[in-house]
Image 1 (cartoon, rainbow, N blue to C red):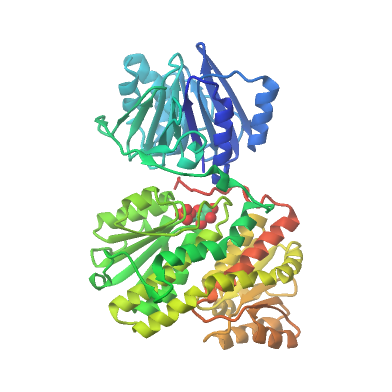
Image 2 (cartoon, helix red, strand yellow):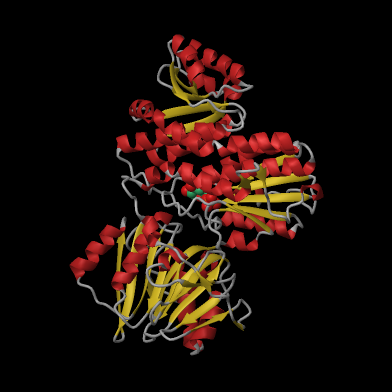
Length: 608
Ligand code: G6P
């Protein structure tokens, strides 16, 4: 989602702004812009579409450098992704970029128009510029004027602001959306959406807290909290390598990232499993005997990780497990109390709805546990217990390796809690831990199906709809397969419980409907096999993902089957995720869509 960068160094900033915006590209955006100030002049350039368009305009129009500047990649919320709606916005002396949504923007806009304001764009951001500009007319103290004006906003935001004529002052504010401050490796200060954006310039990072304002000059900076009190925030030494943004030998980040899965799963598991003793170690604060149920909440692919874990936790811990998407959960009135273990799962640790759900659960007295990939994220800082994933930076908008690491942690969690509660014996736990230890090798073996998947992908590239089916833990993997396919190919796909097919979707089945059926050889295989027969009887175009032995049987029926490595029922969600990721990827490559930055999507969804 929108990316923010601000630089005040006194030295030319345009190259730095652009290199930071490139590091923020992965979050997803549809227009971009920068503004700099020099000798009392403001210079701004904006463009719809990719950063390359902005760079071209900067080159064509001739760069007017400055020693201070702000930049932005915009993911449109209010107003189409046009140049006119792109940030920075300029209102009188105020130059502003914004991430988030201002909820009371319509009433503020009406009030401003009534008072004669000339509003140029359809954005909520411009309204903030007007509020600050008006306040500066009645309060010449920039710090208090900005705090008063921003104090009128409801909703979520991160802001970077410059004031014309103040060429040694960069202002930032955050509420609901992340914003960090970087102390320059050489003189100067920076503000940005994440530490990665500041990695070319700074390793000394301050994570602003909810409601904070920062006023930074080349020489120093001051942070005020929501109440307007001058505060000190910790400075963290962060080593973020922008080199990790390299695709290596791969054409796309997505390919690089799913081929990294054996390594990152190994790294993640080794944090929880003692590979010698095959024991699972969890955070010592986690005591399952305090709880009566588990509630798991997340969004997108992370939600599907929770859906997989529901099967494991119910079986291994024998506790009721509720799973919901955060955007629904947070507006329901769920019965939550201190007997409830609340688990939030998030790659970024910043997703607005998941964060709001976490806060709601905390307020209701739940113990909160966050499974997050970014250890410095807001969720990681706010949850009572953190179980980190070690996927490394995930750049492709469509999540692959982060999902695999999430289910790795969840599998370990289900074993650890199962032992704690006495549902699993040590022998059971050891056997399951031993199975998990095989994952890096097994996941690696799965890539052998790539050739078969490429063939299937070329067929799928010609269709408009695809159904993915599965039972038990293969059901969420079917949904993940459908989600990956629609995200990066724009083909309509649905993931369905195989047994539910006959209650509706079977009406869609004919020879033009491809069905991908995820059928590991487990306790529900025969049931899925019956569903395969039902679909075959109606002429559906079936491909079954299964084991070698079962694939042969299926092929004898004249149906397509792709054989995956043999694995236990417990490991099946890991193994069967690989082919559905590969299928989405190769279909997208064949169709020529933007694999890493699909249209309309964002990596870090910091608005509701
Ligand atoms: C976005 C991304 C998805 C991701 C979801 C949740 O929609 O495009 O890939 O699964 O957000 O993100 P989170 O960072 O909370 O895991």
